[in-house]
Length: 363
Image (tube, rainbow, N blue to C red):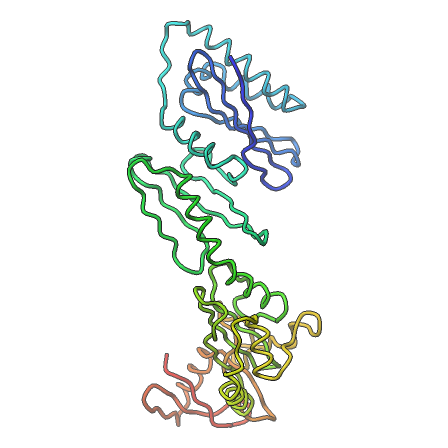
């Protein structure tokens, strides 16, 4: 019997998961040995293919108890190998062991991808995560779900990309082919992520709170109660983005005017952040010059900053008031006013703080 040990993944700092392949007379056994080292008492979990369970079933409980009392991984592996050899001898050389070709094929597929690319494997081998690292050291995960008809039927998959990832599974296809296309797609979006990373690092992002690699929008703080919602085209990330200015009209209208006046200055050889600051002739607030709390003003109706995932986006235009509101909160408030007026898709009312005329679109 020969033994081959390969690292599958490192889960945090307290869990190690190992894959072992034991071969004897053309028989292969696949084992997952998970060790939780930072808990007391230490936990050891032994899982594997169905063929392994068939061989070890008479002594499996006793073997697990022995593993819990062993100090090193080497001792555990040695014990598993000894028990496995003993049980094969007990079964006798002529007693067949049912083969599981699908497990063998699955691990061969992962071996082709490279074990350093395997980020996670579920105990039932039906879910695997493959990790790719781009040229800027950003990690990207391709989640794959293996069906019972694999490889004749392609697996389901999921990943965080600014555009939906499509892969057509063909007869004879492999996980390596899928993973290679995924890596090529990452290269296509490298410039987009560079731009988004620069915005995240050098401005205060109000929305989303925790941007993912698929998010194309950023709401950036410009001043207290004033923000800019950007929508970046992932296929042409250096082109002029869609811009929505949010805040008191007396403040954002001059910004729109200046943007439209200077738009000819936009250069696709400069970053989005550099272009915006040059065209608007302002320096964006950043983590090095301000604190985020200066821009996170609570809604004047519900007294919260977040309403679900929404932040206040409507602001009273009275310079002595400047009170922000969630769109949904302001809509409900105006809708209940006795003198509310409506026109087309808008409701008209008054600010609850200063009676300044306000309007919002109908939800």
